[in-house]
Structures are given as structure tokens and as C-alpha cells.
Figure (cartoon, rainbow, N blue to C red):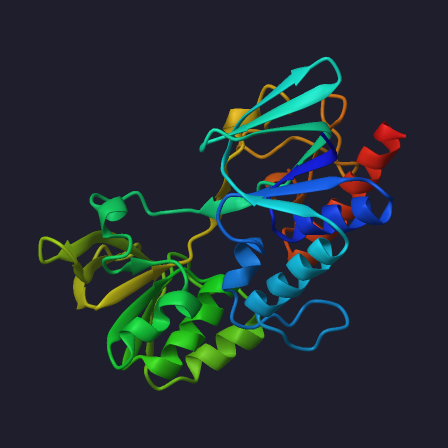
Length: 302
């Protein structure tokens, strides 16, 4: 039996663990994939106060080490169900494990959004990737495409430009939505071509692996086929909150409809981080949520 069970091991969940542990509570953090969340895939992070530059992976490692050093128990499991019996939460996982907690903090984060094109799922790992840090080296000296125009897409395209022969950036809007500094740096690259107001219409394959993209200008309707060895998607993120909707209301976009206090309609259950309805989703706002949710859980316990 734990005082606080945290589902999700990103910046929100791990910060919540740190604050709860420092308040003298017993804490379990359950993470389904890898500790650190989305930030672990960022090659360079320059917006954490007090840190000029750090890789997302290094930051995630430090955060995890800090929580474990303070006494957090951690489990790599996928939570499939939560049930509340009386004042106790019962948490079940995909592998059949079961845990109990007096409070629960859902820090579920978000998952990669996809284009929804035919054959997309089957091409993941066979030409379609989401992380240039993880997979960029596989395409050294080859031609790749980056689909998206936000900060993540720009950072990853810059990273790919250092190892790939050529990088094509496909952005559905007329401009980039990421930071001007990143956009300017990318546009200076000799081996980068950018298509604005352009959509990906189809993936081209040899029957098994990706061989190219068919793109279409959203204004003129003109189509073109590009030969690429790999395509990286950075077209946004989406929550996975539906399994827990009975405990916390969802808004129209599937995010937990909770305010800055991180509370829900269920006493003892709190939400934190990118899975919560909010305007700004950054590592600092996730960490802020984690602190707020942990303190709310401690008040509930006390």
C-alpha cells in the first residue's frame, strides 16, 4: 500500500514523486515505456531555468535518479484499469500486476499524432520514425523527410541535416510554428529543402519499406513524388486519457478537464502534466503541475 501512486514517469510524474517523497509519503511511479516522457527524445533542451543546455535524455536520467534516490519505487508496466473501493485505489496492469494506493496522480503525458494515411502503422520502424535522436544515425548519408513545423520538427530536422545527405521538410502551414531562432538556423542549411502549405498525400513503398512520399501543395493542388529513405513525423501529440474518464472529466479534445489545482471529480485522484487541459505544454509547466498535484495529494492524505 502506497500513499501516492503516480501513473506516468515524465517530468510531471517524477516531479510529483519528488515533492511527495520530500513530504514523507511513500511513492510508486508506474511508467509504461521509458522514464522521462517526450522530453527524453529532444536532442537539445535550452529552456529549463538554471540550465543553459542539456539533452532531454540526460535531463530525464537526472530526474529519475533524483526520485529514486529519495526513495521512490518504480515499475515498468502499462496501467490498464483503476478501481476505487472505499478510500483505496486498486491499480491493475497489462502484465497482471496489482498495486494499491491511498491517492493516485495521473501524469499520462501524450502520444505522437499520426497522419492517418493507409499503411502508416505498418511502416513504423520500416521507414517511419518519430525520434531523430534515436533513429537518425540509421539514415547517415541518405535522404530523409521531416513532416511538421513546430519546435520538435525544427530541432529534429537540424539534427538530421548533420548526418543525412538531404532533408526535406514538409509543413502544412504557410510558415513554421516553431521558434524563429530554430527556423532561421534550418533555412540556412544547404542540404535542407522546405515545402510550405504542403500535405503528405501518400506513403510510397516497395511493398515492405518506405521508399518515398507523394506530397500535394494545399494552394495549387500540384502533386509531387519525393524519394526518401526515411520520414520522421512531428505533427503534434494527443492524450490517451479515455480509460480513466470515469474518474476525471475530459474536454472536447480528450484532455483531462482540470484546472491549475490539478484536482478531479474523484476525491484522492489528481492529474498533472500534458494530459491536463492547458494552454502551454512545456517541461516547466509539467513540472509545475507535478508539484501542485503532489501537494494536493499530501493535503488530502493529511
